[in-house]
Length: 475
Image (cartoon, rainbow, N blue to C red):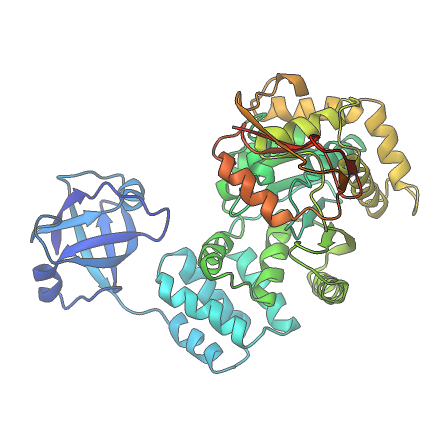
């Protein structure tokens, strides 16, 4: 059936949505959440349908298209497209089987993940898959199979040179921008470290948001390979490339109800690492009140799972449990965190020494597992690279390769207005809540306003006098 395109002028980000007039839907025996194939020339997409009861939105003979569909089809209002019904995918049956507690095969996981990527599953159907994995936890074999399915349904970044290093932090700690210090140190030592990072979902800044203060972070696979060839490293946004692409869609479903099935969390992390061909991996599990993982017992549980699954995937792994009971670094928010990082790389006395200490430890462990330092000597070598200025020079190389300019910490623009929060009495700071700090930073405007956030003047165990600044909130 041919229908005339109407631009609805709405973007969802995902899923792909098309709107039919109820009369046309009735003629075609189509219902809400059914799938249709929309074809324009050689281009086609599968979209989920909504039905309009009013002709003010979409008249009979028209099809309303959201921005993502218009872009994929390279079409506009007034053009004609062909539509046809798409049968329910086989993966729905596999999701039902998982809801009953059945163990899924690689073929079944692959079909589910492939259908998610191709927009054949609605958000409701993906929610059932997430819920099934939450109710009936994936065993080790299933996590490995799901990880492989997530990798094999996307692109894979391949290199001629090995080892390939990578790191990941479970998260939940405000600040903690170790990656941007670790990557230039490791790259300076001659190791490849292709770091793809996320943007903020609920935090004041992701690594990609912070790096974006200094340079571009959106690149194709081909461009990333060129950057790495020049510098041994990259610091880019994972969402701009097709690496384990189902992951972002699954995370979007999990987020509203804070569902985070253990198996999917592990598969999500390791799929991203496998898709950049990582051979050696460092996992940081921060533990403490207010962190994502609050008990050492749970951290040890995750540590054993990471080690077991990585072994099956052929990745050499080191898992470290770190203190996540308070923010790490002073700046919370993209520009403030970028300034902290550059102060460390410049060896400036204004640097946050807690962030430097942790970054050096992390970099040292990667040097050890990558064969660039003997066991126990990695941190010393990492510190030497940092103090020599070589890590700063490497960071500038990476920034330039990613389209930025040479930058110093003092060049970074922070919000021109500021509110100082002062102590209303003298005493000792006994706790700083990560979640509260993150919420305050976001209320200031981070991460959308790069210069907004919080700058901490005090940390746990610091003494304060009445009237002392505890934190400044730029906006």
